[in-house]
Image (cartoon, rainbow, N blue to C red; front, side):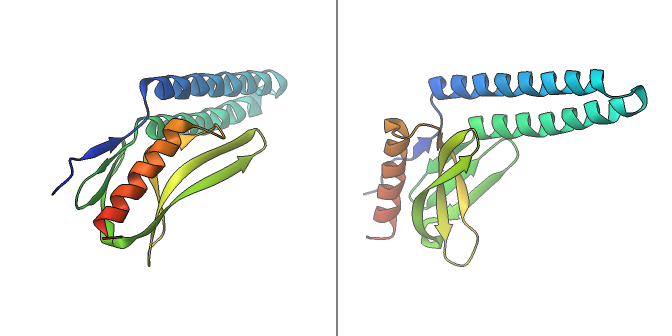
Amino acid sequence: MSMPDVWIGLSKAEQRRNWWWTGFLTLVFAGGAVAVGLAEPTSDRWWWVGGFGVVWLASVFYMINRGYGRTRLSADGMDFRTFVSRRSVPWSEITRIEKRQHLTRSGSWWDLRAVRGRARSLTIPGAFTNRMWDAEFERKLSVIQERWSRAIGG
């Protein structure tokens, strides 16, 4: 019996939190650009401000793409959807689903990865958190692992 497709993505509250962090990032970069713009001589000023702008734009694009990415779990595999890409990965290519922790100076965050046998692992869109014990994130992990286990007959 075939199971219905399941979508994995951020809830409205998680998307709102992602937008708050994007706004905070924007304020930090704006403050840095203003500080450097006022401190540097006129000839060098625009290079610094432009550099801040380019890094800010890349960071904001990453956060928006991450915040609105989704994954569809079907009988055949996982379909990843973000603003810039669409990708399908059959269940047979996946060797395991794992939770990865990323440590930074400002804290840590977790995401889910689909580990493939002979290819690089892929981040699963729509599943990340910065909370150590996030029930919704753990639910997403268990749903994906259950679907993968059933698909490979395990």
